[in-house]
Picture 1 (cartoon, rainbow, N blue to C red):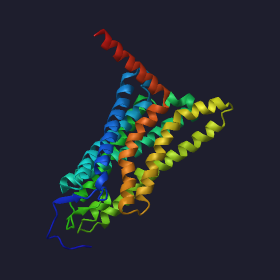
Picture 2 (cartoon, rainbow, N blue to C red):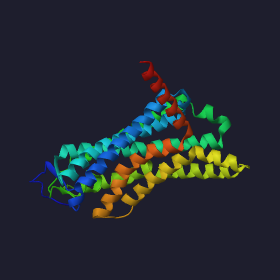
Picture 3 (cartoon, rainbow, N blue to C red):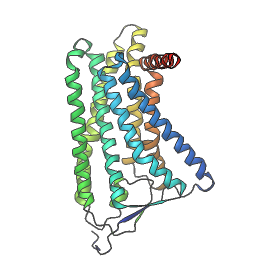
Picture 4 (tube, rainbow, N blue to C red):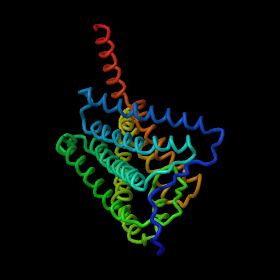
Length: 312
């Protein structure tokens, strides 16, 4: 344990990507484009689902919540990263660093839980279709959504309150493009054993258990699909959950690579870049491009807007 509490840090320096040099402007413009497309894509899903009555179902309700989570993640990470890339680093108060970590944790935990609920929804729809409407109703959706938010806020408070009490003795440099859990603890001269222990315990209900529920749900789903006699029926049924499975694979694949393997330096930054920037971009694309109902609803909404503009 470090014992020097005399020089408590109040400013944090994020180094970001130090080896860009001549690629700095190109990388900045790419990130800016990705950010704009991510926000617009996720907002579009929320608007289309809200507009179309045919999409007022549990699956699309949770999809809008997932889009909101992606917007939150992108908004808290990318604008700050743009500053870091353009100016090759950024100094910010520890309070701002902690706030960024709070919203990063909130959006990440919320996405884990939402993906779990969505997998259970697909399990009920495919494996128990006759009882689907009685199990997955409006009451279930509201209770599940409320539970996800309550658990997420509980996790965020459990992690961030002890972290806000840390004494930071330096150096004040974080070799990353955002304030993540391990980089913040590395600045501490306090005993971080309790915080790390709590973090390891919280991995069980927020990462491991959701992942197991998702895997078990999809094992049952795949077994059920394989029992369908016709090839057309199998393809049609699988298409209803393929987009969700793709999102789950992207999300948990990046989490496993980042947090279970001890990657350092640029390797970990690149993996974190995929998780914080690329995944929120791909989620709306996967759902919109592979989902016939969303594409049809978007076309109807666009036609109605066009007709209204022509009348006006």
